[in-house]
Image (cartoon, rainbow, N blue to C red; front, side):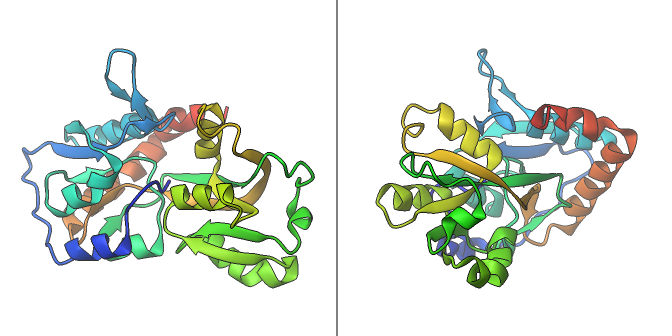
Length: 249
């Protein structure tokens, strides 16, 4: 997922900061923006819950560590990570090439299907061929962007890249885009939101996927390797499959 204002200029400001390794006794302080159910959200009691949180706790337990989860606004996650106010980010975070300059990503834990979102008036758009000659938006540095760069001429598409999904949404509203590619769960969430449900329509699902992963501060190799070992252990035990089962019922 990509939301509001994680500009590359802001990210590059923090890349010079080095990581500070945890001691064996330190809990992992994990930042998340709990606004993206079912990955992470607030329960009626105000507790941070969701697939991402269950997975992070399972990874930590596998490595005999503890987790402290902090509610951090989306725009503050990268600065907090770079300033070592948090040790990791798990928040439905998409692996994008330009994000790799300021953080390190774990092995991906989920492949999120990409759907094509259009305005509600484009009822006829139901498959790729219906987008012939259209201008479409996609996240810069994404796997989908790379695939479209190879296939756009054959599809007759004009492809524009964006760093944030919110910017693509505004471009669709303003008529700059005919369609854009979006994470399936995020699109479904937007369809439930009174502010956006009448602005977009989920036209069709694609074979494109984007990887979600856990981020740690750039250069924090020790924590990265520990998280990857824990994720591998959780996968091998079958716990990972049980945790993510609500995502694809």
